[in-house]
Length: 298
Ligand code: 13P
Ligand code: SF4
Image (cartoon, rainbow, N blue to C red):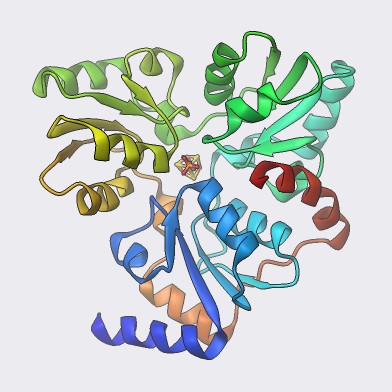
């Protein structure tokens, strides 16, 4: 383990590389990363870094977003098969169709989507700025793709907007049920419930706080409770425990995103040594996706 960690540090220096990792990644991956965060934080880092190479530990849409924001940089991903299941639930052709069915409506797209879909959006958003982005659109009618749960949550916070929903969802968050939350509440009475907005509406209705993975960490830090129920992917435990010593975090069972666990120390070394798994995107698509993604990072 020590040897491989040392090799990664050496490669980082040789390549002038930065390692970015999502909050759901394996603990040992988070520990070698230069920055760990939510989708918005990672996108901002990718757009501002002065490194030549970005090693993106996360799912492919995240590495694609980094490439869209920093087209001149080399973006590599430890495992190019790490696809987000929700991102596969919407295609560019479907966006074109729903747009033609709703003339005048702006298309707001969750960052959990393919680069080809981003190229068809008016503006992109993450779970941490979706409400702000939808509220800031010029049209009264907004098409929100692909997450129907996040879309429903956003619509409830944007009463002035008519939100046309898409039927995508995250299978991991969708699998968290009211029954599981009730059980956790019975086991840990008084513990606040913190939920990711990708959860079902009826689950969000049971939450005391709703926010992105990064927001969850700040909520946990400022909470008075030593027990906190966390409704999201279990990879969050690593940072929560590191940043909130003494607090205990309780997750629903089986909340594991296998795509987020595909980057490991070996695959990081291997892609850095071979400079392999480069994120390459069609130049026209890259160009079209830039404006909506740039609007997302501000
Ligand atoms: P965050 O932007 O909140 O980190 O969410 C990313 C994600 O994939 C949640 O499932
Ligand atoms: Fe996609 Fe869900 Fe995994 Fe997040 S947790 S990357 S939304 S499949």
